Image (cartoon, rainbow, N blue to C red; front, side, top):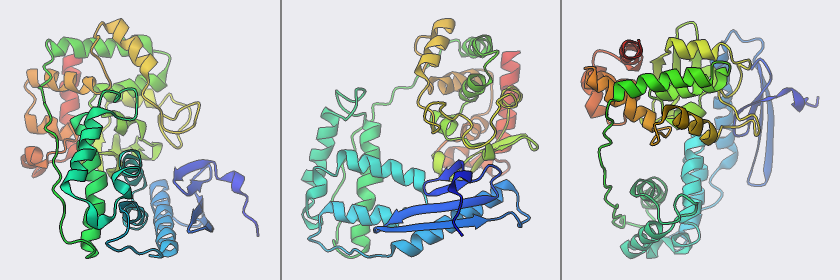
Length: 370
């Protein structure tokens, strides 16, 4: 019997859609010129929504793995691009968002140059040349005068190095060429009078978006320390109104584990007024996909608050400085922000977690805003 594909209105993942109540799922992907289409029906299962989605993703991964196979091999004479294609298709298929980000970076900076060289012939000189090219010019208006050291490091260490390591693991080459990472000129961003600025931004957000719950919730998430990537990828299935928590999934944070946080009351209130509670929380009304950086709305906040240096990430700097000034313990603050350096917060993790630390931090924020 033919499947009515029009019922699968929710995009769950690449190659996976769901019906309106997430009880039925549709797997649809093409690999090696072979189309795979499977309908999943979980209506008779006694599972909650999160479990149904998890099981559907598991089925997708299993079907993807089953169909891919290693139909292409490589030797020391193969171009780096061949090794990269096999690596990204076979090793990384379970982490779609993270894989796509790294693959896009590889395609942008490596494929047309170093990617054409035989894997055995790639030397330190080639990697240094790639780094120099990125330092000189990037592929966007923002990087017209060169990529930042952070971007270069991500391309070299997260896109290029794993491909070279994959060749070593398959005993095609024996040594990893040295990868010279550009030094990051880190300057500590000092925010003066941070407590006042935090309170000012809070009032500005409510003044501008009193009747717009969508942007009120979005900018409050930023004010409470969430990174832009964490905000734009947040789904309604990540919000738990009963437990008053929300989860930043492993694919969208910097330590690759699910992180559950206390949901601040002002954000919960704003979220409750958003009409749609399926798919992405902050879905683009134009593309129905992840939202781009809200530059026009951010400009309104900058103008109203007169904080000219404000960016989506600068919200975090203001929050860190304000809570630091008020005496919040560094370990609590680090854990509530989801810091990458686990050594910094390890002491706190021994007796608490992200949820507990963020709850403590949220109380401190309430005191600052009162």
